[in-house]
Structures are given as structure tokens and as C-alpha cells.
Length: 299
Length: 264
Image 1 (cartoon, helix red, strand yellow):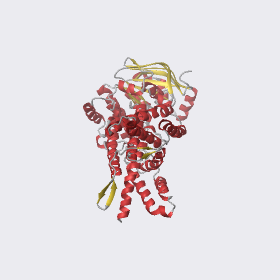
Image 2 (image 1 turned 135 degrees about the horizontal axis):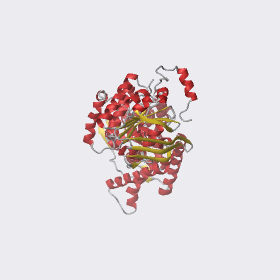
Image 3 (image 1 turned 90 degrees about the horizontal axis):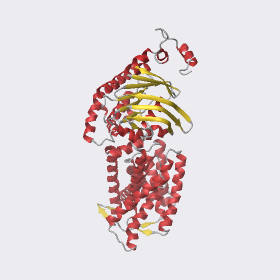
Image 4 (image 1 turned 90 degrees about the vertical axis):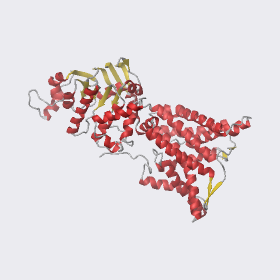
């Protein structure tokens, strides 16, 4: 029983990191109506920026205090997010969904190449930013890095929810999420809102990279997290900020359980598959995800 | 206050919808714009509010001025800021937001937060049913409630000119009547200038100061309420009255419509 609970706890914590990446999908999708296939690569670029301002700067003889590194990383990824929006997706506003989809694929390949070009192909080590180690809570051992990440995800979810429902800028973004023409008629600048969403989404993805990679190794392979978080975002509902962490926990726990109990029987295939099976099953019943916006039809 | 001078609108670079449309709205007036489907009424409103961009439309000739400023190619955010707000046709509430959030989005460009709160009360004076609905999801309101919300939301921007696109569409006759009465009251009490597109010609003419009739992208007839009500063509086409006082049969009207065009 304690084993089982330990697995559930670990799964939930890992799931909340997926949830954090899923939030970055959701933030962009709400405003731009684009599922950014290259979100994993965006996260990797954020992580390389983080490396640049920590180990990279130290290597050049400019060691920076961690808070300064984090601020510079945040600023860098904001510029990067805005640049992606401006150069790839803004010119495609109003184009068919397939064109935008293909642009996403192109961006994915382009960013991989760009990262290799700028930072090289070798792996990099990210310094310890969040405390390492484990916390003993009752009979359970909890990874402190993931625990802090989970708390951050939950706090961010609450903050973003308040932002989208109470603040002026958030309501503008919410109006854009509903319908671009209606938002325009209310005097909302749809372009500005979409640019804001890209910046916000990139910052959230980079925050996820901090949780994911603190004290760990960064390589291009980390981008796979994008395809792990995408089913989480779909399951939670592409418009729902609050759905993302919950869906993350569901997927994370399923993955952890499968990894502990089914993987030995299936040559390790179950933990990779089960999250997607669960996602397909839920989407068959609720195509808009758990908390996504159902189209309100009036008969 | 608002003038359209020889405005041409072309969609997608090929389809011309407005042809030298001329129109004037004076301060404080309630003006209606009538015409058959496809006559260019909605396009006229969108040309004014700058919303043509959303549909690949463009003003290719002519000039639109509002309060002395050329707004021919102004973007929608600038026109809203200048005090010109359009309520789109088809009950475009922000479905998944609450009624309160919908109203607040209407005021998102205003810096005076305290006055925004006071304006909620002002909106409730005209639409006393709204306060009870504040926390409801807007997509689940009834048609009449949505229309109240839409006009309320537009009022939250404190417009000087309100553009309404078929506000009575799909409403029961009594609700439509109430809505027109409320719009008239807002026009009178607030001195808010209104330009309204309507299919419900009889009620719209009865509530207006001045009216324009469009066909084929042009304004073909205009006049004060009395002039329009007295005009034989308007009576036949829009008010369903025959030459005398008897109403012609539907078959006759259809036949007549096919034969006669407004312009040769």
C-alpha cells in the first residue's frame, strides 16, 4: 500500500511538470488558435538560454548570481517568443489551418537546427537551481525539486486563472480566445493579444525547463517533453488553464503506475503507451477535453 | 457626426459590395439603414467600424469621417477609442465568460476604473434584468437576454455613436418592440447617436429620426421618418401596403418586386 501511494505521489509530481508545459500550450492556443507542435523545442531554446546565463556565462569568466541568471533567461525567452510569433505565425494570420500546421512542423525542424548551430550538439549540464534531495513526509520520500515545481505549477494555475478572469489584459486575451472578430469589434487588438500569449507561453515553457532540468543534463532530446505534454493539454481541454494540471496528474499517475506494474510484463512499453490510450479514451467521450470549451449550440 | 462620401468597398480584391455609398448621421440622431439581404448594410457598418479587415474587405474609394476625423482606414481599436462601437449581428456574446466579464470587456479601453463600476449601474437602468444574470455564463442566456447584454456591453465603452446590426433578429415581436423602445430611450436620455441596420422595417422606421434605404451597394432613398412612412415605394416594399390601404397578396408583391427595381 505504501509502495502504491509512493508511486502515486511521484506520478502526480511528475504529472504537474507535464501540466506546466501543457499550460504553455493552452496559453498560446487560447489566443492564437494554434497548437504549437514545436513547443518542446521552444522549451529547449529556453533551457539553452538558461544554460547560457548560468554555466555559459561562468565559463566566460562572468559568473552571475542565480536570480540574475533567471531574470536574463526570462527576458531572453520573452524576446524569443515574440520573435517566433512575429516571424513565423503573424504572417500566417487568416491562412488555412493546414498551412499553420505545416509552419509548426517547419518551426520544429528549424529550431532543432538553430539550437545545434548556436549551442552545438553536445549535452550541457544545468546547475542546481532548485534544491536537490528528498523530503521525508511520514513514510513517503518526496523529491524536493519536483515538489517545488508542483507547488509552482499550482500557484501559476491560480494566478493565470485570476489573470484571465479579473485583469483587463487577461479579459482582452479571453475575448480573443472566444472569437477574433468579436474581440476586434470591442476594440481589442487581436495581434497584440496573440503576441502577448506567445511571450507568456514561452515564459511558462522556460519555467518548466527550470523545474525539469535543474541539476540535470540538457540535450536536444529534452524536446520530447512537448509530445508528452500535448496529450495532457488535449485531455485537460485546450482552452482550460485549470484543466492542464489536473490532466497532468492523471497522465503522470497512470504513467507511474504502468511503469511500476505493467512495464515488467510488456518489455517497458506500457508506461509510454498508457497516457495516450487514456487520452484517446477520454477524448472519445469528451472531444473538447475535461474542461475545454464545448461549443454552445442553440437549437 | 458621421459622414460616408462615395464609399466603395471591395471584398477579396474582386467583389465590389458598396458602390459610392453616401450617408450622414447627425449628432443625437437615431438613423436606420434598411434594405434587402445583400444590399450592403452590414458592409456599410463594418466599413465604418474598421471591421472589414477581418473579412478581407477594404474601402477602395471614398472617405469616412467621424467627429471631424478621417477614419476611412482606421483600425478597430482606434475607432472604439474614438467613441464608435459596433454591435455585430448574430448575438456575438463571449460565450464562455460570465455576463459580468462580458460587460467589463466592453470597458477595457477606459482608464477610469471607478467610473466603469458606476457605468454598470447605468447599464442596469436600461436593462433591469441584467443584474440577476451577472454570474451566468453568457452562452446560455436566452436570445433577448443576449441582445440586452450586447447593447449593455457596447454602452460600457461609453460610445458617442452606436452601430447596431439587426438587433431584433430572431426575437419575438414583443421583445423586439421592447428592445427598440429601450434603444430609443438610450438615444433620448443619453443623447447617444445610433445607426441601426434592421430587417424589421416597420418598427425601425417608427423609432427613427432619419432613414436610408440601400440596394445593390448604393443608397437609393433617404428621408426623415415622415418622408419614409409617406413614400409609396417604402410602403409597398417594406411596410407591406398596397396602393390604397388594402394589403396586396404575397404573390402580387413578389411579382411586382421582380419587375420593379429601385434604379432603372
